[in-house]
Length: 166
Image 1 (cartoon, rainbow, N blue to C red):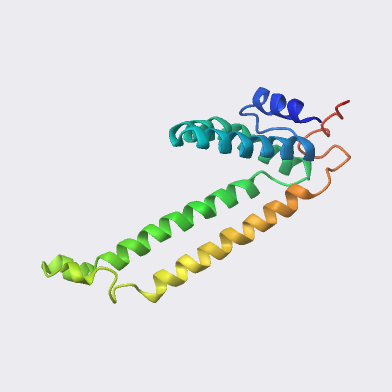
Image 2 (cartoon, rainbow, N blue to C red):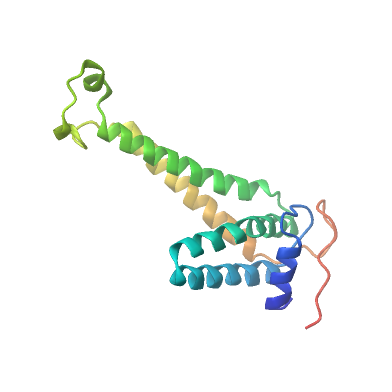
């Protein structure tokens, strides 16, 4: 599949999470999203964000279809994005934990010099570390799956994508 065919295919299947997508379709569209967001962000941050929103759903859909092409469930993609969400939430909780000593706050004795003092619990830091390691592990697993060859036979997600003539 060519660069232009991959872009057309991904936008034509904008929110199609069923079926399969070959390696070339995924990686050409990935390259397109990186280039489009780089150019758009160099013009304006708002325009870069708009382009990012425009390519997020087709990028997610082709990622899931690529997993299907290797015989794996799209939930691997969901696990990766979910782990990123857990890292973000845990970092926010860590910042709040560091900024506020809730006992002092409840007693009305909170002072601004307590900010990032001895208020950070070891459990919060450990949780952020473990969540980050899990997200990195899922990133590596997804990358390995994305690089693998397509299953040549029909699998539970359907027949292999037809080869495109260049």
